[in-house]
Amino acid sequence: FTLNLGSTTDTLDTEGTITGKQVIPTLSKSKVIDKINSFCGESFQTPPMFSAKKVNGKKLYELARKNINIKREPVKITIKEFSLISYNLPNLILSVTVSKGTYIRVLGKDLAERLGTIGYLTKLVRTRVSTYLLSDSLTIDAFEKKWKS
Image (cartoon, rainbow, N blue to C red; front, side):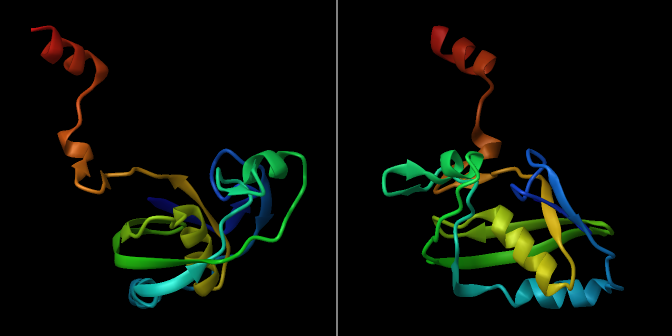
């Protein structure tokens, strides 16, 4: 995923409206790596309001669109691997392997905060779900061609 530092949105991604801007402190590459490493292991994360998680039968994003903010319970997550791919401020390109239920937008926000600023995701690519790899996937055209023959 790509994390843009120094500004944030209400959805923590590009779909939202910019809600804040902040000067990015001086950040060395080694400081960024140290902060990334501090996330590895088990912790708790509060689901964002702009998510499909249901609370009392309602999807949180439906409530968020009505400007209704409700208390969400933190859930246990595990960050299995977390690494810096590219360091080109204000953007960081990162790779992460996480447990089910982890919100990468929240992880990006939390990393930005540990770095002394704010941030939001500008790109997210899911490369694996369980044993299914993006690299093994087919386009619709390739799928249709494969199954018609």
